[in-house]
Length: 319
Ligand code: UT7
Image 1 (cartoon, protein in one colour):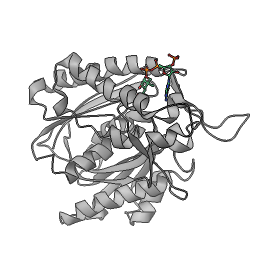
Image 2 (tube, rainbow, N blue to C red; image 1 turned 60 degrees about the vertical axis):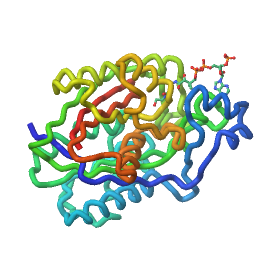
Image 3 (tube, helix red, strand yellow; image 1 turned 90 degrees about the vertical axis):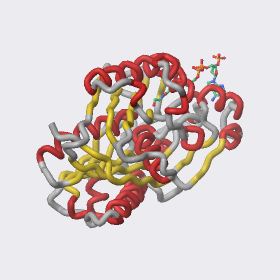
């Protein structure tokens, strides 16, 4: 089984910073409620003209800069996967536009995938097979969303939680770095949904969510996913250097940390500045951690995501 390694990362922030106080001018809410219930202080929304494609291209450019700084070439990329539930177009998919904008080889697989907030984990799992099929080629995996375009900005239950952005990772096969994953789905149409094309109305959205149900699901799914991975890898919990989880709610992560007896300092958190960027949250966090020099070669990193589907996933990687 091919192992894998993330060899470059990048991110593209959406341009508009929206604070809790800004939202309090729009709906019946306040900074104290949002901060205490979710941990979110601000989020970023796409400016006019910014799209899932443009954010994906920006994040991919940053990751490619880092790849090329290592003396490697974008010509090595054999697949582009974009995890998103908010693509700019149904056709062409986002990945094709990334291929064109970055001058990537034409003989590559360019695919969008939708597993909502678990999208980056789903993509990583696919990467393993792709790397095995095309030895020597790299995979560019992007998570990108413009949730602000499918949120009902009059619904305080959802509009305060979500944000926009993109993160990218270049992934190489590496026999010395085994990769362990777990992934699961529990089909449910009502707890967390975002309608696509409908008979009555062409436009997608808005996001509808039973917050408490999703909360309950997440605090169960994160430890379940992580424990399944650790069982496969045989790695003791204490040997994991970083837990990089989907950034939806700091209370969800605090619950999961407590249930597993992990100190919160080992959880990387940035949701106070980004809100919930769905499939983009984990790659944005990884890119930010690299920028800060927090990720060192050989460290064990546990990724965990959960969300609409319902779906969840976890993966242990060696940096
Ligand atoms: O990627 C996965 C995506 N989703 C999630 O991760 C969401 C998971 N769930 C959550 O994060 C939390 O359930 C929420 C943050 C959504 C809500 O927190 P909660 O502690 O579960 O609050 P609640 O739903 O029990 O709401 C408490 C009250 C309600 O008022 P009443 O019915 O008790 O009078 C809500 O109407 O807070 C009210 N409320 C608000 N008040 C001020 C709901 N949204 C707001 C708001 N500002 N934005």
